[in-house]
Length: 127
Image (cartoon, rainbow, N blue to C red; front, side):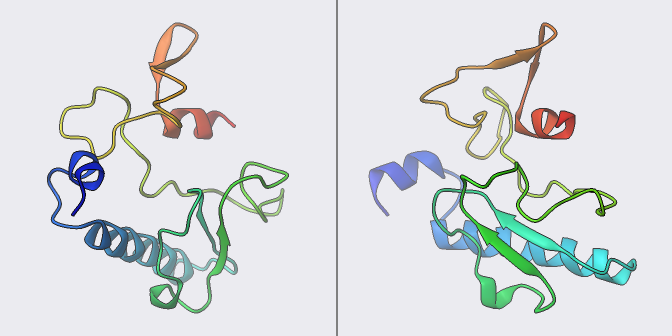
């Protein structure tokens, strides 16, 4: 492993393990949604590069990769009943959080809404 990977994932033995685990969690969430009666599930890997292994996701899933879509969640419209947030980063300075940051730690040190520090999940939930 390189120095950058070791620094970003100090508790993990490999980036590949983290990507596999993220895929497993997305797949479990999708299967749960289908089991509960969902007609459509879109899995969005919104990193700049592909992190999930598509071939390990439930074949009924629709998959969107990357950023730069017209809307925050690609393919989602008023016909959807909800959005499930799986695998979001912990907020900056979260003890033992994996890759703690809010969107871009190079750009933002923290983000506050109405005076309260919030992370990616709170921001997206408000959208």
